Image 1 (cartoon, rainbow, N blue to C red):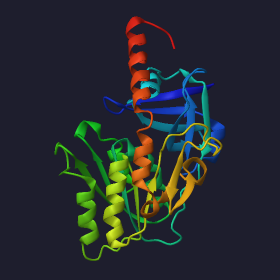
Image 2 (spheres, rainbow, N blue to C red; image 1 turned 90 degrees about the vertical axis):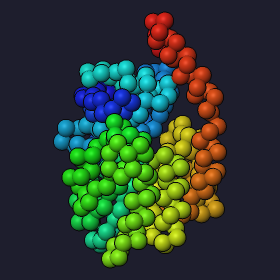
Image 3 (spheres, rainbow, N blue to C red; image 1 turned 45 degrees about the vertical axis):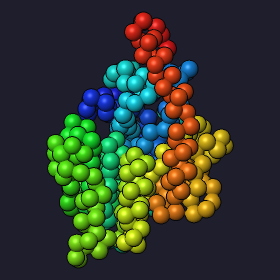
Image 4 (cartoon, rainbow, N blue to C red; image 1 turned 90 degrees about the horizontal axis):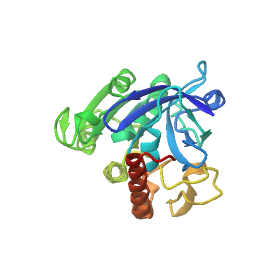
Length: 283
């Protein structure tokens, strides 16, 4: 059992939990993830490690309540326990070998997994320009944390309630076009449409771009094959070959189709869970 040490409400749907998992914290590196189960009959879901503390032995996760399991996770409070908390899984992000300039783009809850990458780049001496975006100001997360490890921080909202009124790609294009802004690498994490839009944009500028993928996943060890993605015309498994890949090599069209495979089942599971909560049923 893994104790929830801290729980914070970041927005109406975004929550942060600090979980006591000393063995995971000891090995965790930026770019890796964990798989958890809320209880022994629960679904296994992957969540990126947003931060880790080796001394305290804790892992920080940030999630958005969108489906049955994340809403169920949201019912827990500090002091409660998770049944499983497995990790660290996946390959750690490779840091550039020399100092330079990196642009980091985080969209929605994708700001959470991009944060440890930016933090690592900053600590390695890279100049990081960060762009974060959300549908509305109320859904922006980790703004202060991102600002602390970024040379520049640009904020975007779809509805214009904070920062640039528009998409993160608008700001990214301006940065790419700005004279003297030689970009060594771009890291983007967020919804699939956002990452695909970033990839399409940066491809025309011939700038190396990395994305962190979170496809359908079951075991997290490469055995089930559910998280397969096509990268550079080859089949890769996000759980063991990733989750970080060269964006310009990812088949986003196929990935998007696969992400819709269980939409109906997910909808039914959520409806049943909410009905059980209303009627006072258990897990």
